[in-house]
Length: 538
Image 1 (spheres, one colour):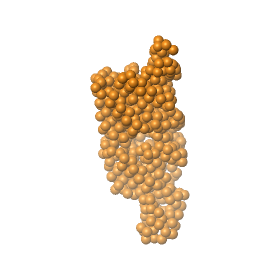
Image 2: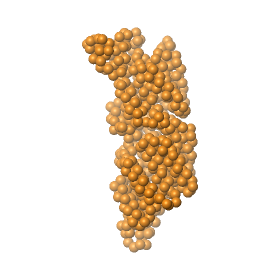
Image 3: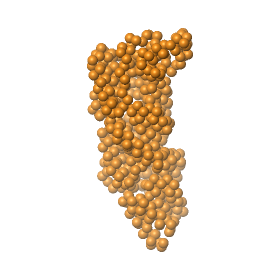
Image 4: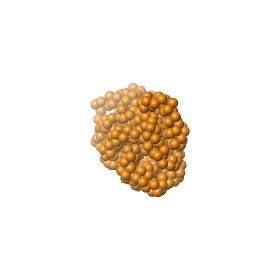
């Protein structure tokens, strides 16, 4: 092939890239690369292969392009390829350290050159690593603002749209929800209204928008922007992009009660990511595991969640599963494990861990510790209706565990109203069950039965595991000694430990536990503790 024909292949390849025909683009660039071994041709091969999810060819082509640009003295071209090699290490392998090293190399190549898109994208990738890998929200926000300034000074829309997305996500996770949502709306509007040189930029930006809105509990906003992301993904044949962000969409569908569609979205996302982006599959495994837990499929849920460890959301979801199964000690340890890892400024990330801690301490009868955790939630100032509803539900559970029945009733009623308003039927049913317990506690048994029946009907419609009707007058059937034993078992003590604490023989404790399981209608000590906690007996 001559030089003219090779140049024509490059033009054909660029045109195919512009319309999202990745196969045709790759064929043209490979033709040009074979003929001339040019840096531009290899860069085009790498870009086309990336869209196709071909990891091996992407790395090989981009590394070859990098060397060719360096040999030609084109520092800007070499820096551009270096930043995308860094991105590849994150996307395909989850290698944040290697990615950071490539970004350092790219930044050094741009020294003394005027700032432009290359420097902007390097800064954005550094911010994304800070946000997603290191949970360093201040560094992420600072980097996003720096990239935004570069973009607006140079007129680089590609950089601007992603910078707004990362900045919005960082603000939301630090607790500045209103400002963060405003930035995400600005980002997403730009993504769907403008044309971009870098085709990946609007997808990258919309992905941050959807996940940020879902993280903030703004379910309606997340759902609307996810539809825009779906349209973009279809246009550009970007299954792996939507595979990442449909995880957030699947979580929204789960919360809003469309479990069949949520199952389809999350299962498809898992399949897509495991094939082309296995390093990014952990959040999807968590969302699917949470759905399985709601469906009562605990063994499947546990397998999925364990596959995503040590991802913080997986640790918390496993802790919640342990709490439901009666292992209160494991639940507390899971919450504390995550809180040790997260900065105090990461309020939204810490929220589920503090929520679990309050519920677990309440179930263990440690009311003072439960109230202390609840106070942190109430002081967080996270103001979307969904998050306020979750705080109200935890408050109701803690107050019920403390025997403050009328205050628990009011908190549960607030939770029911808020969950109803934001279309969260599973959480609403849980709140109605707590409300039923509180109504029982204030002597309004008939009203309690109405709430319990409505909650169970809702759970059946969703396909959730329905809570069994509690034993009649369980409190009257437990002796003070049995309640003491349950409280200690809830703290993780063995029969021998309990015997030593209460100055009883292990045989006596064992007999008490057998009686407790019979009275509470359960088959295991863990289930007995869980049932007793739900009935506010401990």
